[in-house]
Length: 151
Image (tube, rainbow, N blue to C red; front, side, top):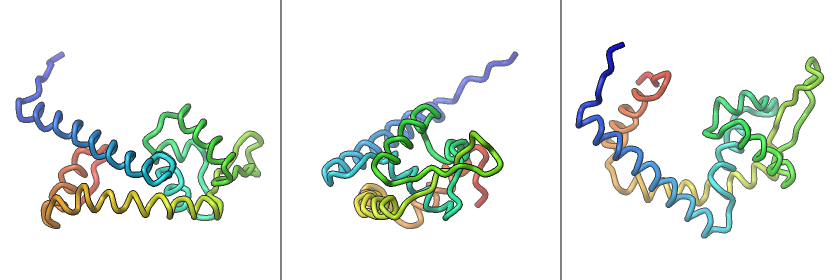
């Protein structure tokens, strides 16, 4: 087996990407906390469920769309359900299966979180880079994604 070592440029880019990503998320989480709002993971799940529409999503479909491990998603769904932000519905042709759907309160919470989250994106990225730089960054990051995002 041939082992390939990363170039110094790849190591530097990797380090910057990881550090900047962590900083942006931490600053966004701080803004949400200051606004007495739940963490970003709540928005991520509520957003995906809202985008799915009235049919909702099966939990395994949600796992493919959010940045949470299965056990974390299960706990978060239980919390969101307890807060009345999502509801679980039985799947007719699958006795053990369920679909998760966002509620009206969940849609409201998503809007409240977005008011802070959107502002954080504008301040942390939009105000720091030009439109052209943002497009270039999105293109480059899209190429690193698996599967890559076509331009």
